[in-house]
Image 1 (cartoon, rainbow, N blue to C red):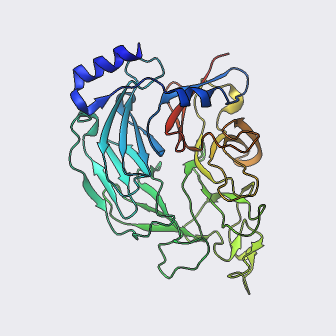
Image 2: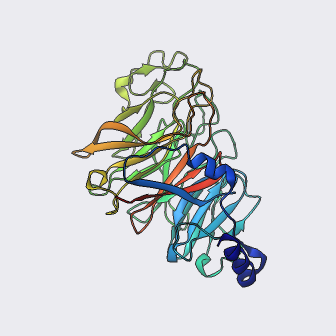
Image 3: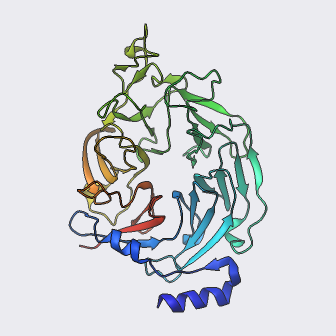
Length: 371
């Protein structure tokens, strides 16, 4: 079947479209993953090096950013849960981590700029030249990769990380949460004191913005906790580099500073798990207990003595605030410490299933509930 799909794709679309069978390494990783009863995980697409952020376009097209220069469009045209077609929309970009889609156009954020591919859904085989939306971001690559989403207000949201582990940059755009109009005008700095945020979402009922922040390194294996923050008003400061996780004074920059002067996180994750993409689940396919709860891709620690993270968690909300956390999918970290995959982003599909990207395996998984 996969061979037939490959031939059909090549005959219909020439060399711009390719289809692949699921690789043996991907199948091997699937066998290690553990989910709650009734849930099923499969490979939606693989052979996608450094697969990162996901965005849903028209007609079921999935857009995928990466850290190594490529942007893809993925299509499951026959509805079997496997994207038998892929289009390479762009190559040799500058860490195009973030992708967003609105009104027929694909927006891609590189380190230094945001670009837009107009009418992309009708031109997948022959993508147009991109239009520059905004090109005044710093060019520093340390924490330079960015997340990109459209908010309920129709504006583009992103964040600019700091160019270091711990420092106090002079340029006020570093360590900030931003938004702008879709055409790149009217840039606003919404909040500061954010070390590196590569994931955010809006709560379904309140439309309040929640975002992750990855804490600093080299304070030990267990400090500081990673943060889930709640943005409520322009001008908030979330503590970096003076205060971490709401209560931990930085040994270098926290002298004569008070943590109570800054906005504390509404939830603290375990240190160094690197929470990235997040989505409030609003579908009807999963059981009701998942409705309006937060799915979190925990990318995993990179320099902890004993690795941790490498999973998808469920953060439970009540009265619009988080109160509990539990594992949803595990198995990417084996008991012997071997890392099989690193979850990055989460995307809900119209049928209520969920996609999860993995930049280590270079794959996108699909999670369905089949009671």
